[in-house]
Length: 525
Image (tube, rainbow, N blue to C red; front, side, top):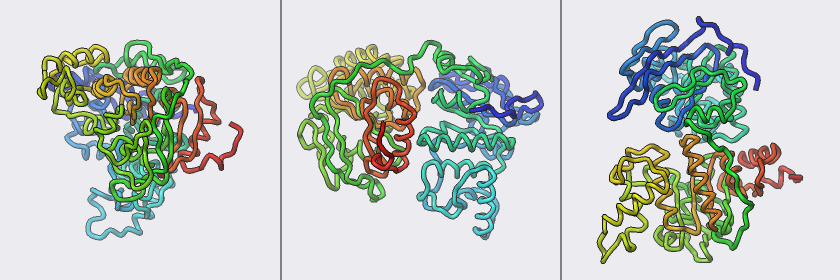
């Protein structure tokens, strides 16, 4: 993508300057004298590992935190934000990764929510027109009268951007904006962001996807352990390997070498299952798929198309309305989670905090959750805590879990370390089938590499793995086959070789992710 001419700025075009920012939390120096500068009309990417301090820095700019030291200078004026409202009044708006919208209300109602005007009478027709005009100005195509629940994920993101623009934001902080978008939607978002910068807006782009950063950003800053290792680096000519090295301090392997798969017998057989979501609406409609021993089978799809419900059906957390699920030819649908565990299943859930772990319990307590009934951890119906701690120490070393002691509550761990605890627990039981849902969501490139190694090791040891992910790069790197899901149905299946997939394959999967069945796309791949 050609960089915008407006990205070549002079000193007086600086919109935001953060100078010497220091932020401390108990036992943690989150930001250590960090400098950051944003110019008018540019897209400035902010990178860093989990815990590097980038979210803290942006929360300070957005008015959620106050710095312990340092200054925030907006258009030459020193500002002291005590709330997000102060930041908005200064033209700083943040679009969070998880949208903050009211599904039952219209686009216009969501944009107006929390504002002082209109005060007593909504006058929705008048404001529908205003918001339609604003959306047209910036290429944010969305129907002001539509209810949020009727919109796609990409359209909902546009509403979040409209909320900030309507409030007069000149600077937009975009937190992982492509995490839930299909390839075509990402392309559309990038066009929108470029349109905004051409009209003088400035954007801070927080992302873990280095390829996207190189494509969209004009300049790049990198934080590592609270300090800036690169500050305002031009994206021209920079490589993803160089950025990864700046982030983690070592070489990172993006695509691990894997051997050709040699699939064995069918391990998991999902047969025409139907299920409802938490709202009682249809989530899965006659979905079928299979996983064999010694292969990784990916499930690709935009968030909210039944992936969560599928994983819960398989793991025993949700019941089938129709159809059945077999594991080693044993019916596991509508059975307890314990039954699935006894049949050799491991489960890495999407929500690692509330579902995958018990946050207030220790590392030891979390890693023995599936083995506490068995010797040597259980003796005569009683827990042998010395054996449990020994087991936890072994896993801590084997899985490189960075934690002071195994008695530490897991709520104090970073996302990457918590994910290692969950994987250690699940893999140590030597499962022959694993469901892994968004196993690297929110992790930095170093942690992602470690998780990918563990999943490939399971496959190479003969286990079948069902990988549910919204990251196409991850699916391409790990999967032997990919099913594409849309509105609870399988749109098609694609075999993935050892090489990078062609643009044609990527485009085909993108079309299926947005609802086009494979048979309608055409053959020739």
